Picture 1: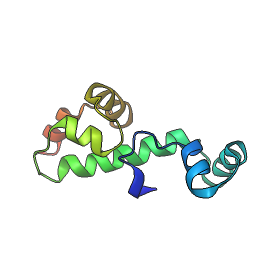
Picture 2: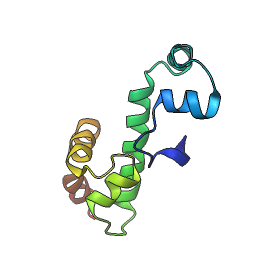
Picture 3: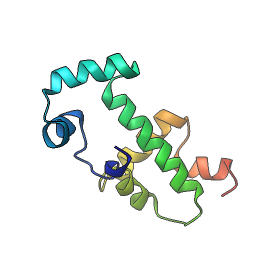
Length: 100
């Protein structure tokens, strides 16, 4: 799944139809059973972990570029809101907090 984090269309339905050729409802139930969380929450968490890594990488990439790299498309505002929801701070505050 990490290979597809930048794909804004990544969803359990997309995986079910394009890679596993399974019923999405069945896959959803199995995913929750195995991980304890819904796929959407798992995906957002993985994307935010990748975003933190990219932010701290020090390549001085723009927030909009990081948003694209983690599957938020060309919507940096949505990315910033999602990032704050998962980390408690905006991407710029996160950078300052880590001395970047």
